[in-house]
Length: 475
Image 1 (cartoon, rainbow, N blue to C red):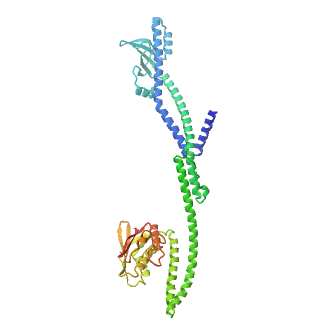
Image 2: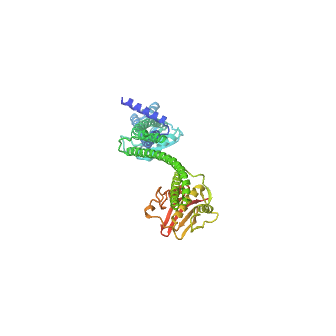
């Protein structure tokens, strides 16, 4: 039963790899198998060297026994008996080294075959591992001249000449067995590790990625928010963080939808109000020109009130349009643009001095309509703030620094109150005095950001205020 369960698990793992090619689980399984095979390769050479030494040691012992048998038989050995003793030891010649003298005990013709000296009287691990490679790459007819210590005569040395081909065949068979065992071990180990990691890590990660994909398809569907598990590890933390993020996004989307509906309703109300104000303005104009002084005064106040209502409607609509991306950014000449804005907004301001020191030909990268709205809001606020100032002066200059142009607007108004400075660029944060909607600077900031620029209040006080608008140079 256990073997069957393991086999079924391996089959499921392989099916998962084939179905999800390139997936995290498939890569994990492949890497595990590769690493186990690599570790098997590292231990192959020591084990193969040990196998080679044992094989040669067995041949040396067999040759030693054959030499003892030959010594006991004396000169009565026939050629057939010599060949039989040598064949039993897989040797071609056997000699004994005693006292520095070499005595041939059993011998046969070795021909002109190449010889390889193999000394097993002292351990040499590195050389023995390199000898494994030499066994595979050496000439097929090479002979090994083996020097070993006999088991029963440790004070002597035995010299055996034997062909290397049987050793090569034995080593090839050993390597094949090691490879098959290593491959089987790698597959079993890799598959078991894969199944364990699939259950502990890969499966939950797939669940996370699947939840993110589903939520991305329809983030407004609350049913697609991930339900985190009770895990206390890093994956559990990731699940809870993802669920919290999805819940926040869902809440933001719902709030955005509500604000969009509210904005649409405000736009419709503004449209209707402007029509009502237009009709009321006709009546108030006639009242303002009445011959009766009291009626004319009331008409003037009514005209101003209706004017503020119209400006509020216009500013709200402009603020709603600010979220729309500007058109293609082009080179815009600043000096004529400023003159056009000033001519429209400063014409009714008595005693106001307008100074435009922008150089001719100075161009910035932006959308002309957006730039007009941006600077019109700043200039309108300045003109309104300086209605009672003496002197009333509004100047504009430019500071060039590389690819950035900073436009500086300076007025001599009374300054901005401290209570609104921290929220100056927030919607409906009025800093322009009575009748201001508090949307002008918010609109100006968003327009500047859309054109990859910025706007900030540099200084303000009794001597006046300074605003700086940073834009990109054209070209």
